[in-house]
Image 1 (tube, rainbow, N blue to C red):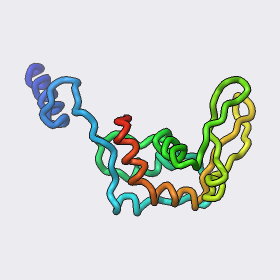
Image 2: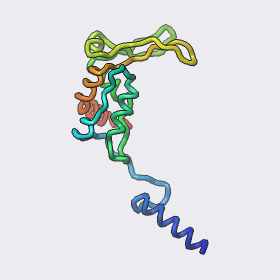
Image 3: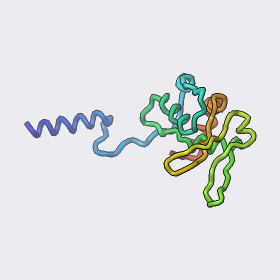
Image 4: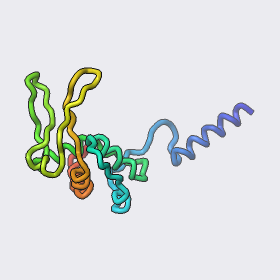
Amino acid sequence: SRCLFYVSDVLRQVIEKGGVVGAKSKKKEAFSITFDEIGKFQFSDTPIPVSKIAELINSLVSNENMKKLTHKHITDWLISIEMLQINTKPDGKTTKRPTVHGNEIGITTEERTGMNGNYTVVLYNRQAQQFIVDNIDAIISMMNRKGEK
């Protein structure tokens, strides 16, 4: 009977993995989102960081076997269209800050205090969130062109 329970468990795992035996999984598909899915984006009236925007967009996608959109994909695109710029701090580290054009669409900064002291966070108001959602195809295109994960 133990042997049958073991075989039963192995078969259940095979079925769950779509016929794949072992720990190997299928390669993740390139990120994409439908017009209907992005249309369900819940805009925040309170300015939010880009990581939250990426999280909200990922939550709309129904395909589990797809690469995730990250905050880096969004900020890289914003840098490429000169809404954000990379600044070098005195300690040699780099930060991303909004340009004049970025400020015009609602990208701002705010000083906050955390466990490790003061820091500056880049926030996106409702207008900036709308700009990102309206341009999601361009962000995805750049993401897939770079072949990033």
